Amino acid sequence: MEVDDVSVREQLFHNKVREIFICVLLFTCLYILSYLILTHFKKNADYITTDDIEDATVNKIALWLCTFTLSVAVCAVLLLPISILSNEVLLTFPHSYYMQWLNGSLIHGLWNLVFLFSNLSLVFLMPFAYFFTESEGFVGCKKGVMARVYETAVVLLLLTLLVLGMLWVGVALLNNTARESLYDVWECYLPYLYSAISLFGVLLLLLCTPFGLSRMFSVTGSLLVKPGLLENVEVEMNCAAFEEASLSRKLNKMRRRASPWQRNLFYPLAMLLLLALTVVCVLMVCFHVLELLFDETAMPRGMGDPRLGTTSFSMFGSLGAAVQVVLIMYLMVSSVVGFYSSPLFTFLLPHTQDTNLTQIIGNCVSLLVLSSALPVFSRTLGITRFDLLGDFGRYNWLGNFHIVFLYNILFAGLTSACLINTLTWTVQRELIRAFGLHKLPLTVSRTTIPLKLLLDNGLSKIQ
Figure 1 (cartoon, rainbow, N blue to C red):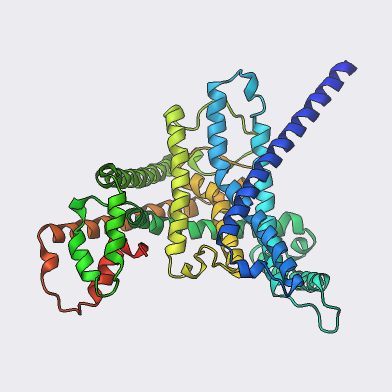
Figure 2: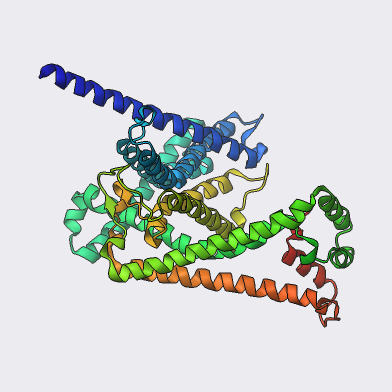
């Protein structure tokens, strides 16, 4: 009996070591990828300083913190796809020796680590990085990196006390338990803080994703070469000749590089694919609205013990699971496109080798807020039936039927409105060209025509 207990403990130990090794390996790969992305966009003058070694050290530490935050954001995006695909793999190979490392304990551990690191980055690391780059040390103290660390720590402590006090007052007004909440910070303050952060991220996704879904058509059109039936290149080049002398040469060069397959096949297929994905998203949300009215299990909730490999999370099996993964990634890309296309956040748009450190910190915070809310966002809309693991399923507002129902209605309505508006204007523009109405004289000045044509056809990207 004692030998069996030892063997069980050894097996548990080996399983835990294996899970830690897999998590470290995954995070290391994401950290390297995130570092390459940040160094591609960062401005070299911010981090390579020959005259001031102190500033160079401070900026390097801030860059490491931003890299950590971005890697956590990427891992948060991959949480649901990894979980759904892992379940389907275990269903396909239930007794495979090479799949023993893939289990519910590993997936549950990933969710807990992402939840912990995402909140740590939002609450501590990113504020520390920002105040660290702006600090100069206390007056009268010896200058150096440690002086900046002391000033940043004091400022961050004061900010934490301010946020704690404001939240304590809010909890006291709502629950009339001010004394308990003050002494029981872990049980009362943190859940409200996590719920507030998640609710803000989900609301941001609600605003950015429908706008991004409509913008995906124009963004994709600017990256692909349109077929000749959908554009009049001669008219566009003649109109733009007064403002962009080199536009015609670049346009002709781009069209010569593009093969007939690219011109006549890739563009229609890409547009049809985007339209199909968007329509499927809207239909799934509408179906989820009906489920919410008649089925209590449709409400998003937490799952304590993920029993992977028992049943598929899609009624269509592995194919449906693959569609769920594609839709989740598509929604994330659309939300990022909508975020950077919004007039409120265009100043954060990174540029190659021309993004300062403050912008990098802002981008990392924004992407982390969007990505950490993606699992809750996808489950709330019914894109997947994979229930939330760990602390992701303990948000206070998830059990409120009215909030979840209204959220689904708003998403379906906003997405449908944006999609109809985009398709209506696109069809109207092409009909005007087909009948030659674009050649009629307009009352507006001719200098405004090229810019409008460039914006409508995505040619402003060609510079």
